[in-house]
Image 1 (cartoon, each protein chain N blue to C red):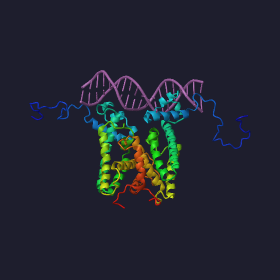
Image 2: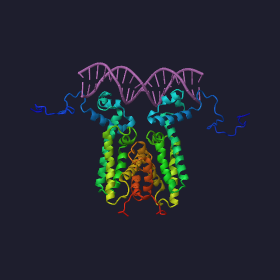
Image 3: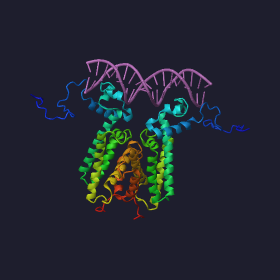
Length: 224
Length: 224
DNA sequence: ACCTGAACACCGTTCAAGT
DNA sequence: ACCTGAACACCGTTCAAGT
């Protein structure tokens, strides 16, 4: 018979009861957790982080404003889940740019550009990820892991370039990665906060300029 | 008689009535505006930006929670004033480092370090200045001017180095300034948000590393 | 001119109770 | 297990009224 368990109890640990089918007695909504996450992300993108209220999210989902607490411990846990999703998107964008660019210098330049473009294109996500809304160190290990994975893409690209002689081999790749990260992060934040709105000061051209200058430095002719 | 006006009305424009002495009929507090600003700054430093409530500020000053509205249009105007003060402090720190360092390469390195140190040492101020709490472009012209003045210190230092042959002369000094700004801003933000907490990843050493690498670039031996 | 006090329209979160 | 509804302890802001 389908779903019947064996008669003999073969030393199953009672700590992890497997749920072979999802319970049919879902009360009202069903996959509320996913719905809450999607609605939160949508709201943040349209109204900004400050515009996110649990009451409105619940109302828009046709659910009580306290239903959320069955799926997230509190509001910051919801934001944390959004941030985690954002880091996943960012990682994919970086990997894509690096690989499609040929895993060399053009790929690395494309990666820097992709980073800034992600932030400018998804300012709400980026603000949740880096806007200081989340406690540090992140209480959510899933979030920490996703953020670390995104950073690792950058580290790997630097190590690859060091092996290819494209980047100085006598520098710590982690420190190099942090420097590049700080640079694109700075450009992204300035752009999102509206500080790059003068003529020729857009995020795109500053990114391109950064790609060139981080390679060769800013030192002038008098110094060798 | 002290304070008496001249008898002849010599074409005084009525638009700007001079107040020769401050009015003696101050109601309860006196210099409430300054007190509010100081208390707000103190609160933000101790409790963070989110910990700032107008009610608590008023209570701590022994004043109604709505008294503030006689001196600031709303809460964001108060934050704006704090940010303006922060930009003034930052500008002084930058100028000081640049001049004491000898207006050359050591001075410029010291300036970068001073920038990051200001942010790390005054995270609350820095967050108000750059945390996305303020509307952009800033409605407060005083704030915009103070921020521009701080940026100008950086621009001037770059122009001076270009003239001295210390920095490439064929690059737009404004674009170079934006790049340096983005770099120190990125380091500062990562540090404040707790992303530089692994071993050897502190803001100080990353700043020092940035100073070296932004001069000479990250290019490896295989590429000339 | 400057400040008060009550009121308004919001929040996030808790908790006993329902199905 | 999952959700509700009332309640609690907060917010920023407005506005008529006081001195």
